[in-house]
Length: 342
Ligand SMILES: Nc1ncnc2c1ncn2[C@@H]1O[C@H](COP(=O)(O)OP(=O)(O)OP(=O)(O)O)[C@@H](O)[C@H]1O
Ligand SMILES: [Mg+2]
View 1 (cartoon, rainbow, N blue to C red):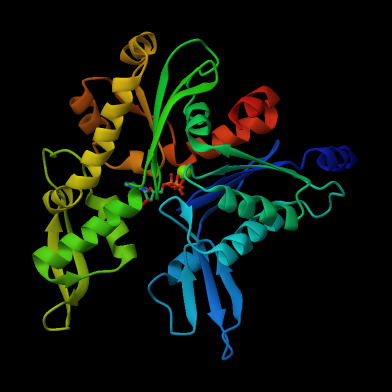
View 2: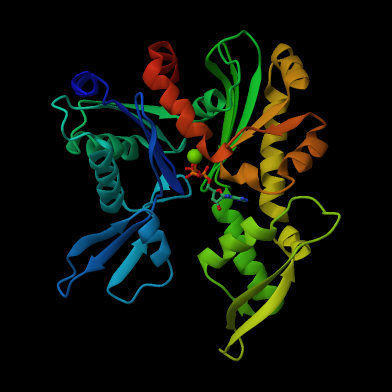
């Protein structure tokens, strides 16, 4: 026991995958200790002063269901910080929750941030971590963390290609000898799929649905390729014309039609990266295939869809939602990886 406690004093470093959809915290030697949606519920009093009501799962439950004085906010959107104050509060909350308060030593914190953050946004993330008690804050970018998390042999002189499809962005990176040789980030991710489904239901069925229903439809019956037996689902929403609530049955064919465009954008970005990948590294990719990470990799058939378009093997890594977090977590243990990833 005593030894455990003493050891705890020296091993309280944290890694955080600060995603636009989910935030995952790993404590050195302990594994994943927090895995929650990046959502904050805020209550405004009569004078407009904001107070944090809930963070994470509890706050996500409130999305689209709040009374006027309560707001459920996603502080990161489309791979950028949409609300600075709330983002800072959220980061502080997660670090404080994760940090072992019995420890005297303040943690070192590695944070994997969306690729497109500006210098100002990166500074805001760092400042929030410092004000939550971090001793040292190191920011790393997503493609390399994803590749490490997917278990790719990035230390070898071989080309590795990883596509991370998150909530806000899709990042594609070619990595060799721990370095990012080519990369590309587009503002297309799970959120865009959801939005396209919402727009489609409105246009085709005059049905108004919210963000959460859009996501549920995608997860339950979304597919990138035709299925032998197409799936069906009953959804509820408001009829745009009559204003009344109604329920309709939709199928996976509808959803596939709805998400054609964001899927094609991801495929185009992948083709562009392949076109500029040095030939020797391209040879390795032909042999080893392309790894998919991020929650978007769970869309049914997305591996088959991409594989057909680029005529290369594509595989979904194990537990894609956790890949970036695990890759960032690995940097807690491997200082060499960390130095290369900044
Ligand atoms: N089974 C599933 N099928 C399709 N999409 C899914 C599935 N499960 C989760 N997703 C989607 O994955 C996305 C979240 O993925 P992830 O947690 O990797 O994003 P993030 O890291 O928070 O975002 P980013 O990397 O863009 O900052 C959401 O859009 C979610 O709807
Ligand atoms: Mg991510």
